Image 1 (cartoon, rainbow, N blue to C red):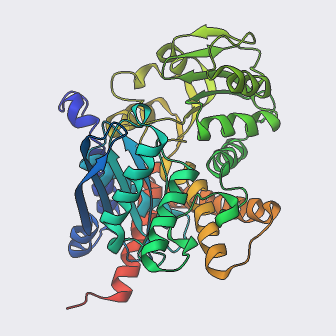
Image 2 (cartoon, rainbow, N blue to C red):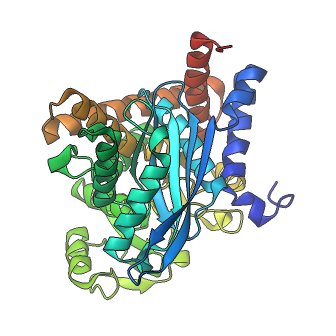
Length: 422
């Protein structure tokens, strides 16, 4: 398969999503009509809007919001700011959110948003004006019962506060439940910030138990040291895992005896980078990704493992902390190598599960303590892992296809129950 398609086709996220969806749908003998419904987003919004920059000139930006499915509840998905955002990327991410919410069985559909911009070159004031204008452009399509955005690449709690405030000003009342991932004092949830990393930890623990491996001194390499990667590494280290490698976009760190993650976090806080840390040697990130380990956690961006490097990946377990880090072609290569893969729609679903908790708390006006959030998060993720593994064993497929089959089955069942409005 790798030789029959170009790299450009292989790394197109929408094509990758479609290939996996089609395979899982065939395994399910999915009704052709439902297949058509789920194979396309239900709504794609493209907006072009002006923003006054700090020097007084007007810049035109393009933004997207794609709602893949709202059959099981409001759309749910982040908003990313990046110069390379594409409609295909947002489409794929929206569909992955549909499957992610269904695989952990929470009452959301899938959505995603993005604005083409380079936030590193923009001031705080410019980012606020861009966020508020983008929000006003899509405001009729979002809301607590319609579509609930969240942070994603290059957006954060402050971005969500601006969206919440803009929406609330238009509604003439404070509406905290329009977004999740907010600051605590305006309706955020305890435990939300590290939830995706905590979910990765749960998946590591469950995988080791399933494969009868011990956590103590289990070697781990983490690719990406942002929110997901750093929290995954920190929580795993506390559980006795040995973090031997951290790979960033501009280089990595390696120490076969284990990296002190607490000290590394302190170093990054002081210096703004992991580089120059004395407790590990510098190593090229591509080389680090291919270094032998027990668990590999890609926790940064899409298309990190492709047909070009999958054969050289040397890990027993792959836990996908990022969305779409492995291409469909690479999947086949990893399967032949016997790598135990926990796919993104399960492995990084801790974030959306905690977002669901935040939305619930906002709507009822009562907030849980962190212990309650953690307990409920780990319970849902643990049950979801078991559901996927059961599906894989029952249908004789790998974990990724099992996760897709389980998710598609749940969404399709809901659509059939609701019927087709005519």
